[in-house]
Image (cartoon, rainbow, N blue to C red; front, side):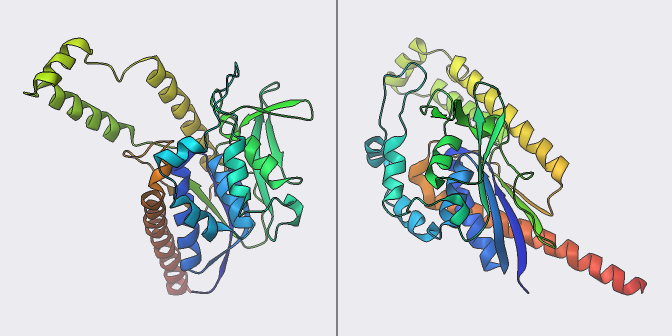
Amino acid sequence: MNKRNVALTLSSGGARGLAHIGAIEELEEQGFCITSIAGCSMGALIGGVYAAGKLEEFREWMKTINRKKMLELTDFSLGINHLVKGTRIIEAIMEFVPDVPIEELPIPYCAVATDWKTGREVVFRKGSLFQAIRASISLPSFYEPVKRDGMILIDGGVTNPIPMNRVVRHKGDILVGIDVSGYNYEAQWKKQHKLAERRKHSTSLSQKILNRLIPDNLNFNYYTMLSRVSSLMIRQNSILMAQLMKPEILVDIQMSHYGGFDYDKSEKLIAIGRQKTLQTIQKYLSCVNADLTSIENNQ
């Protein structure tokens, strides 16, 4: 297949965004050429690392991440509006991905954040690559917000979780979106229900004691309620963006077994990204070939 130019957008999604690595690898494997990229949150990080030409190094580094190293990279804070400063993780990545001005990257790149003061989307197209990434990944209440130019910057997923309308377009390119913002909620619920039933009917004495002490609906609490509501709102925004921009290829990766903090499972998440992207590309090419055949038959 001849090279086809791609304007690529990568969504937010926490650790699930590691699937973006597999998506990029599969696009290149299938002969697509990424000529511009826009990302939000984890998508901004993966997109920025790719634009800097260091995706392979980043993937190798992610293989070393386990629960112990995750704790080592987590600089906990006593701040009143965040739990983690977020400096240590950025510094660790900068050891093998040098910080460069965005405007000097070999392909057009932008990252999206949100100004907490005004509620407006903020798009980074120039300046420090890692300042833009750090602002875009500022998960509210978790990472410390970034203060810049009078703004208080938080995660871009709040306003534009998959910024298809921000990526630079070139004549004849294909708009591609990789969306990992959605969970397979029904599968998750069934899995939790099955585990709860197993615990309820367990013959273990310790489990019987726990069953008396712990309520059946433990997984349905304030935290899970707020987390699910936030996730659903982000998901709906990404769906609306896809309906507005109508990308030629939209890889919709909904997961049920992996969450936003499963950074120690990078290879499994990357494999999911590759598999889902290949399936979507095959469907796209099948439709393109069918259209070409129809045109030829009507001539």
